[in-house]
Image (tube, rainbow, N blue to C red; front, side):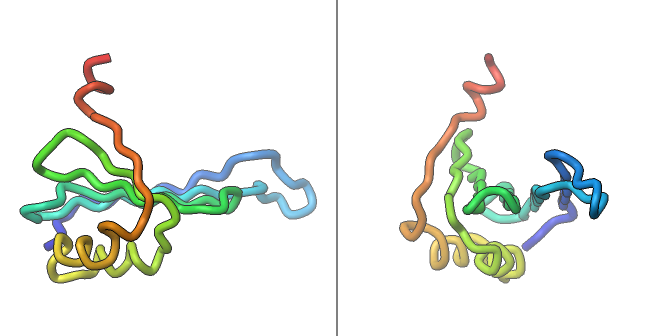
Length: 110
């Protein structure tokens, strides 16, 4: 079940194009918190200048964040809208995408 935590940032970066008054690329970061026994929160980041997207997952049972690369936005949407985010994660993401981890405890103590 989703809780009320939702964060959406659109950041426009790069050199401004004088012809269109727009920036060259945009980055979107979304964060959703869950009332789940498995997952604390997820983040999803996309950018028009990078050829991939990233799904970040923080599990309740440890201080590590797992970052999965090349997860399509439709998979993230299915996760956010699932009745059980843990079950959806296991079916749609686990063992299907490459990931790396970093430990929040180490970052916070530095």
